[in-house]
Every structure is written in C-alpha cells, then in structure tokens.
Image (cartoon, rainbow, N blue to C red; front, side, top):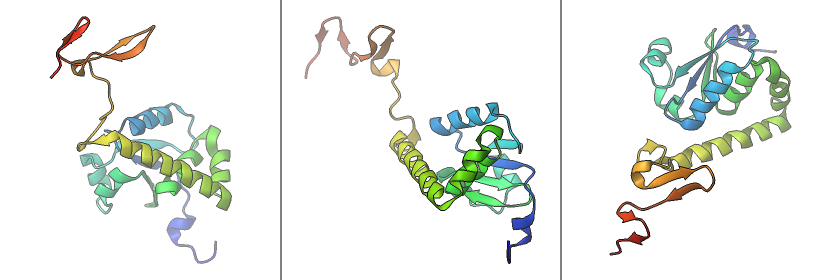
Length: 164
C-alpha cells in the first residue's frame, strides 16, 4: 500500500450499513444480512434517519437514500459497488466471493448486479413512493392458492361489470 492514508491502513472492526428502509428490496436484504454469520459486525441503520444524521453528520444523507453506503468504524466510506463488496467481505460465508468481486473482472460483475438492483428499485418507485406495483385488495386484487392473483375491477360484481 504505497502512499495510502491512515484510514486505508486502519483495520475495519465494525461496519454500519445505511439502507433505504422504505425500499422492499433493501428491507429484504437487511433481513438477510442480519441472519448471516458475520466476521465483521454489521450494524444496519435506516438511511436518512435521525440516527444516521446524528452518527454521520458529514455524509450526504440524500445520497445515502439513492445508493447503498457503508461506513467503517475508522471513518471509511464505501458507496455503490464498493459498499456491496465490503458488506459481503464482512460475512463469513461470502468473504471469498467478496475477494473475487474485488478483482477487475469481478468488479464488472459486481457493477452489473448493482445496476440491476438500481433498475429494479427505480421501477418500484412510482408517484413519489415505493411499492407502486403492490397488489391491494382495495384495488380489486385477490389471491387464490389454486389460481394465483386475479383482478376484479372495483364496481364489478359476479359476472357483470359496469361499462362506461
């Protein structure tokens, strides 16, 4: 490590993962992360929350809602692909994968995964809120274990439906 900063040479003993608590994919991944055996303890904090602002006043908290941000205990800040890789590095069963993803060819693969997740998140963000594609009973959706999801538009009952 020539010319690295002190932060580059400081061992990481704890990582704080800032995640978007309103995003269903982010919430799912948060749950998955807490169930994984960790070599480096992960603390998961909602991005943009009062706790995140108090603990990390120098961060762009709007930016932390746009992309995953991970903060090391010595002030290291990882964003985007690097944040995903360092998070995997903290997990016992996924550290070898993190090492592979940190190579030039692995980084391209990791970047593709990050872009795919971002595209999915973007598709879920509709009308200024998450979950535009949720099936809601109030919108006429119902689930039958044998048929799956089906839709009966509001105002339709039985076999008839009011047409305009």
